[in-house]
Image (cartoon, rainbow, N blue to C red; front, side, top):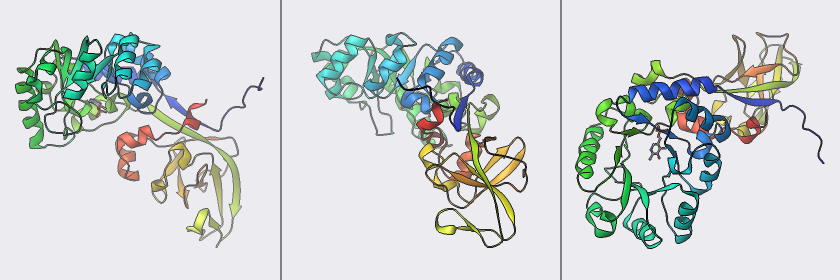
Length: 348
Ligand SMILES: *Cc1c(COP(=O)(O)O)cnc(C)c1O
C-alpha cells in the first residue's frame, strides 16, 4: 500500500456558501422561471463533488453537462432524470446509455431525432438553433415528422451575444418564441448567465446559468449579485536574495536593478496559471502585493518579496482570481480562467 501523501503546496479553495448564494441570486433574477445549473467540464473546473451537492442543496433541480462521460459523476449526487446532456445522442450506443442511466439527451438534429426514436425514444429535451449556428435543429426542421414525434420535456435555444448589447439578442428571442409554437413541449429555456442579465423576458421557464454560479460576471447587471467562488492558493517553496544584474527565470526576461529578495512559488502553467500572466500578474500575502518576476514556468513562478521580506518557505500566497478583473489582466476569458485550473490544485 502507498503511504498517505504529504500535504500539497498548492490548493483551490471553493467557497460552497458563495456558490449556493450565487445560485439563489440567479434563481431570484430569473423571476418566475427556475434556475438550473450548467455543471459541464467538472463544474467549470471547480469539481463535481464539491459543487453539485451545494447547488442541489441550494435548490437547483436541473443540471446540464455536455458529454455522456460526465453523467455518472453528477448522477452520484442528483437524480439522473434531472441531468440534460447537451451534445445529445450521436449513436445507438449513446441512446442505450441514456436509457440505461436515465439522463436526458438534448436532441440537436434530425439525425439525432432518428437515432433516439429508432432506439426506443422516450422523454428528451430539444435544442432549436436561433442564430448561434452551433448545435440545434433549424426552425424548419422542427416541423419534420421524426422531430414532431419526439416527446420533448424542455425546448431550449442558446444566445450567441448575451454578454453584449447586440440586436441579435432580441432577434433570437423573437425566433425562439416563434419556434416554441412549432413543436409541443413541457417547458422553455433560453438564458445562460448573461441571458439572465438581459431581464425576465429571456427567462421563460428554466434558465441555465453556468459561469455566474462560479463567480463570473458576463454583464454589469449581474455584478452586485455574484461573488467569487474559486480561490487558488500556492505556497512559497524557496526564497533567495539576488543582486543587481541577476536575472530570474527562463530567458532571463527579468533583471534586478537593485538587491532584492524573491520567492519561488509552487504554481505554474501546468496548473492553469498561464504565461499570459507574466508582466501583469501578482500574488498576494494578505493585503501585500507580490508582483511576478520573469516568465511563468510549468510548475513555478517567482515573485518580488520586497514588500514582505519575512515570508519563508511554506508560507501560503493567494492568487487574485476575481474573474472579471483577472480576465482583463490576463487577456483570458472568465470561462477559460475557471476551466484551465489544473488537477494538481485539486488534490488537497
Ligand atoms: C454552457 C452552456 C450554458 C451555460 O452558459 P454560461 O454562459 O456559462 O452561463 C447554458 N446553455 C448551454 C447550451 C451551454 O452550452
